Image (tube, rainbow, N blue to C red; front, side):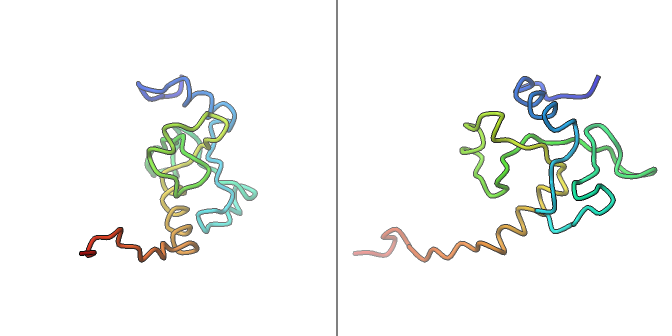
Length: 111
């Protein structure tokens, strides 16, 4: 039996089953994942390598820049299985591609 979170297990299991318990990153993290034929090879409860650490996949939005509030309201169909390394790198890459250019101060210094 694979590990699962205590809260939200039904959503987590739905996402993991649709992903085959494997990270669904297809290069959004910047890694072409050539060893996994274009998809990250990390599997839930697997190991990164022979002497590596255990991988715990995360059910997170397909958009790595989605806020926690937005993510909490998404249905399982809009979530993806991510390994922590790919999710972090994909968010970093997305921030570089779409920087927040807002200069609006929301009236902070208006008198």
